Image 1 (cartoon, rainbow, N blue to C red):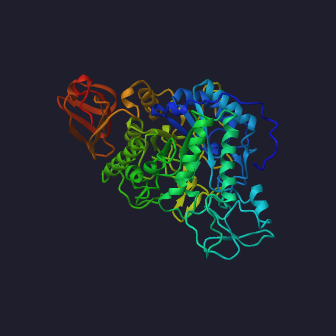
Image 2 (tube, helix red, strand yellow):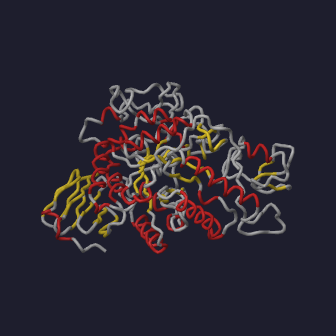
Image 3 (cartoon, rainbow, N blue to C red):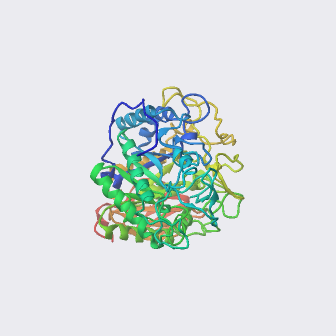
Length: 552
């Protein structure tokens, strides 16, 4: 059973939002970092009531689902990814009742709510761990009586050493080892009592929040559960079992993984997995080859990978296309359904606007995210061109290396001077969590909401187009014409997308271009069978019936 306290705020199940799994082909996801999105109580830290007050904005933007980074009780050594109670909302965010209110209000606007599930570890302040450090028979965590490289000394009467999953304050839950070794007795099989208890706890945690209106979970570090697992065979088996339980017990709910390898994770049972800055055989190269941010600058980087979305036009999207092709083929072969996720950025990766790349240059990247056959995920503020802010103070474990501090991607959402009653309470209070971008020219929702030529309106128009044009469904055919400058592809046989993130004009031969109807575009000219794009130009063109049936 779960070790938790009674929940006096709970009054029964709310709207289950149980059909999200059937809508992923057309779903646009929006990631919210709750600490810095919207503050309702004026303490300078975002909260659930603040998110609820901004739901009209999200509905106006057109998103279908929101994913909240962890909002559970935590000492916040790792921004909430060190959970001390999986069944209670952290007081700084509100109460369980506030979460239920959020799911109810979101459902009224057609928006599903996903929570972040930290499946592989807890905080060292969790009651489970506090019990384990004094009980030598407790095998809920990976524990050794002798020193082991990478293990941490146990702080309680038990002594010994525990295995962390990320930071030392995040002890790894025991899901067993795929390979046993008599010389290493801490390695338990995956069906030992401790691993069985933890698998059952995962189901209990998910059921608890499903019963309160949650539509699904994004699972943190989903590949990290079973240890020493060549080919992740046992880890995949674990998630396949979870998916079978989910489909039987809570049909329509979804599991989205932080795995970074949808070719493996979606056939393993997840409804979706993102291409990320890490993961897979090439360790995140497909996403980094699209928009690695800041190589050769003071920004945090993931290796000197030339990015397709940079003005220097040194990159190529071919690596991304190959990874997407392999993943979609594996998903189709598995026969269980599912989608690849494509994020603009996230709380761990540098924003699209970073270093020398400005918001105008990032427009083409947004068009790609919204028109590619994948599930788009917009990180809060990317829709207005918020930038990675160098020099942001390290906060709640954000620094991971000398040149890599995630705080610059976590600064407060820039609402600006909004009128009260329009998308919420008006101008937000001052943030005490992280400072706002100090640039006086920083973009805001208030400055862009009435400007039809703004990035915000481009993203809104793209979401609207994706919803109303079935040629942009994930399952609609794709024909890739070029992966460089420009990048070009055709969706559904007759919807052409041509993109130029570079600083020089480009052109592309495209039969039927002269008669095409421009649906979305900037800096584009079509003449006969040629599309011409200005620097940072883009076009979504309806070619009509001439090309129907030509896609492969």
